[in-house]
Image 1 (cartoon, helix red, strand yellow):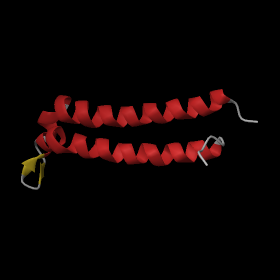
Image 2 (cartoon, one colour):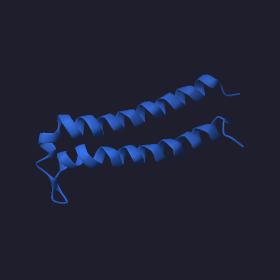
Image 3 (cartoon, one colour):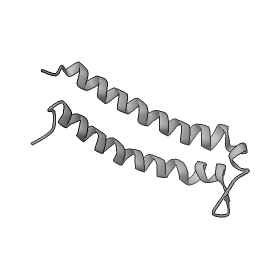
Image 4 (cartoon, rainbow, N blue to C red):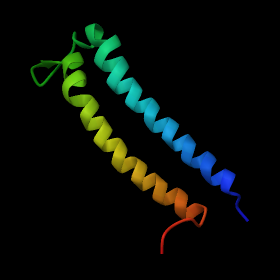
Length: 83
């Protein structure tokens, strides 16, 4: 039998992974490394500007779908899914 603690460890690990990606894209790429990224152009815009204005939003939306998919897999793995 699977313990609830194993389920929550998997859940928290997924949350930490998603928040780490979000932090890197929104804070590091959009603020800290913006000057370095601005040396590259994407569609006529500087890459640092693009990450600050659009990239972090796109990444956040993608992370929402990724999280939902992975949580469904974790729920099924630990038999916690809804019927």
